[in-house]
Image (cartoon, rainbow, N blue to C red; front, side, top):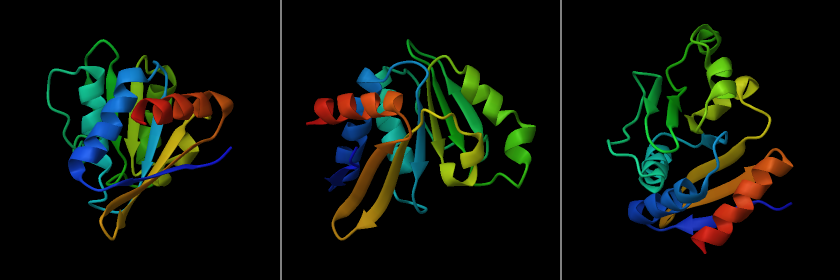
Length: 155
């Protein structure tokens, strides 16, 4: 299976890519976001929240670490950037992800990769000459099914 690669020229476009996923993501999916500071991880997550039909704003949980957003498909937004070694285990990240009834998004997922579910969809966002380069792949057939539906919905 190939990596889905796309170019996102603007923050609005990246938001729309996320909204396409939010509109179709089944419950129980974990999205692992990778990328440098300012790459667009939170922008993509805000789009996902819009696609899920969430009422409130989706902001970076850098200081809250894990933020739960209620909705028809609840969103768990995790930011592992400031987690000290062992802290993710201490706050119950692995258990929370395993039992989460909606869509889970983990920013800076490379810092907690050992705690992520086996069926993750992985997204790497990188700065590009004009906008962002986005690579999407999955770690299982379940994840690939989500990637294929997301690619088809996005166009």
